[in-house]
Length: 348
View 1: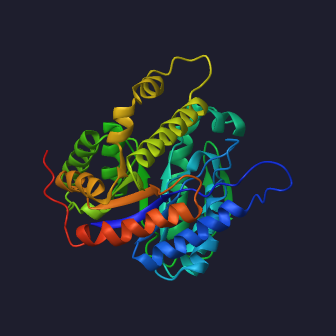
View 2: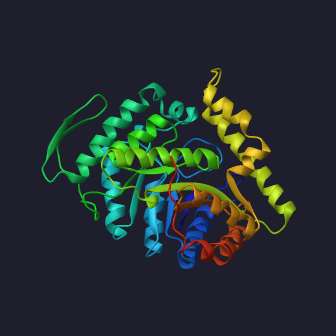
């Protein structure tokens, strides 16, 4: 199995005595250590207007991370295309790819949080159309050697050629977050790699990988387990109490995220169902919290349904030394037992 990281730096908010960059600097040092421990990649989220300090300028932070590392692949999970000027984004991504020596993995999606679309004053009903136009422009910008014009619904460009060209050809690997059958089929049809979210249960992961594999093969391509990144929260617990406290923090954070994702006054069935379904049992089922042996058992269950690439989120409350100790224990006591084990055959 292959292991990477998935997550976010977090700025601390408060009075003048609090250094708002502390969480970002700590995040960089955490990733530098992860590279030394043998982790393969680090994917960063993009979020806005949360009030709890999540990463917003993903490309800026990835540039800094790429400069401080040498082998770690740097990725986005995900850049939300409807919010970005696609030509400027193509230039920024190509610059990161060039300076990193071709280490960029470009993960993108349509977005789902109401508060973010509201903050940008972009109707969520336009998300899919904006996504499609931006994606077409991104790929054209990365691959076109000639100047071109664009006249679209949302964007107009005159006589442009995007510079610099990316280091990876024809462009950085494209990853797409998806969970519904329709969106997973679309990822496979386009030839993209698939990102699966950290709150999905092992049973959901199994069915989604099986669907993706069948669709990839239906389009005449070979399925590679490394083309599916499965995000999992992790915490190597010191004892049973530590494990339960960590699970409680995760559930509380999940509910906080859901509150800003749901449109006020609207009965969004999917998200409200998820918020009510996030019981302690489901919370624990979708996370790898516990002793190294407990985590190994969960990894074996994921491997059994075709998971080959796991992206770890978390490690400890508040980052810092506690999170690094968890990361070190995972690298020392878990990774060696799984690193030489390939994903098993996908059933479905």
